[in-house]
Structures are given as C-alpha cells and as structure tokens.
Image (cartoon, rainbow, N blue to C red; front, side):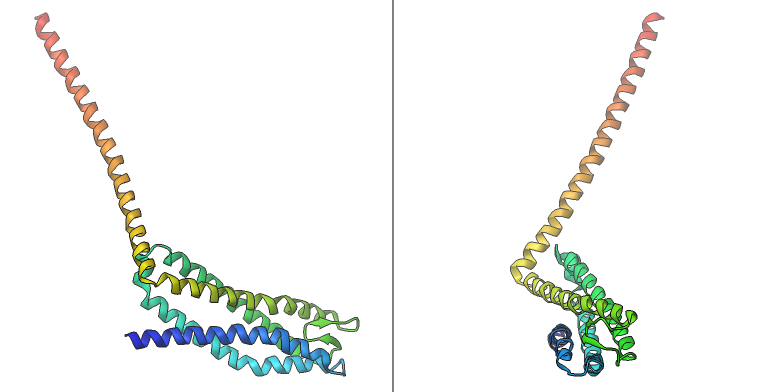
Length: 224
C-alpha cells in the first residue's frame, strides 16, 4: 500500500511539473522566439509547430497528473472527513484543476485554429500586427492571456499541494482531528441544550396545568 501511495504521489507531482513547466516555457520560449524569424509570414507557423509538437507530451503529463490526483484523493479520503481543513483544501485543489484543464483545452483549440492560418503576418506567436487578419489577431490576443493564466493556475496547484503535504504531518493531523470532533461535540451539546430547554418548557407548562386543575377541584369542594 505504501509503494502504491508513493507511485500515486510521483504521478501527481511529475505530471503537474511537466504541465506547469512546459506551459511556462512555451509562453516565454516558443511564442517569444517566433519573433526572431525574419519572414513575418512564417512566425505564426513556427510557433504553431512548436506547440503542436509539445501537445502530445502535455496531454500525457496532464493525464498522469489527474490519475495520480484521483488516486491520492481516494487513499486520503478518511482524512478528508476526519481532519478539519482537508476537505476545503481538496475542494480548492479540484477547482483549480478543473479551471486549468478548461484553460488548457481552450488554448489548444485556439492554437489549432491559428495553425490553419499559419501564413498570416504577425509580430510573434501571440502578438498581431497591422496586417494581421482580424480573426487571427483576436485569437492571438486570447492566447496572450491564456499563456499566463495556465501557469498561474498550475502554479496555484503546486502551492496547494505543498499545503496538503503540511497537513499530513502528525501534529497537523492530530490538531485537525481534534478540531473536527471538537466542533461536533459543541454542536451535539448545542442540540442537547435546545432539546433540554424545550423539554423544560413543556414540563413547566404541564405543572401549571396540573396546578390549575387541582386548584379548581379544591375550590369546587369548598363550595359544596
């Protein structure tokens, strides 16, 4: 079981590292280097070819990361329910992963469309010029934003992963479990207090009713 967990962590970390590093390198290296091509009508084609060659590797890295993350979530599921803070961390991590997947997929879709218009004159991979067709320029502007959004999201995943590692320390686990069960105990005491107040009111009401009935019976006897 321990070896399997080590494998899952390795898949999670290596896949995420390739996803983050490859995307950041592409934004800085591939898109930027296209500007150095002398022929303005070949710049977009060079950048598109670079991204096309990286896409299969990136897809494999994402698949490995997602598989490792899913496996870790399953093996750590007892802590999600028992340790305070782990559930919130898992929710944030899942949200970042879904956002990064969506941004990566849309980015690749834009790249494939640009690859079909590779002969359009541009300044660089994500920088249009005056002679760039409007549709090509619009896609380039979107990619200019996405090329930084994806590293930001995957970088956030790396930070959250570091937090998850801190939460697995014995002291953090003990503290989180005590906080979780301490909260449950407080909630239970609160419920008991409310129920007790309700029972007390009902008992007091019954006593009042009984007292009134006894008084009425005693008064009737005195009259007779």
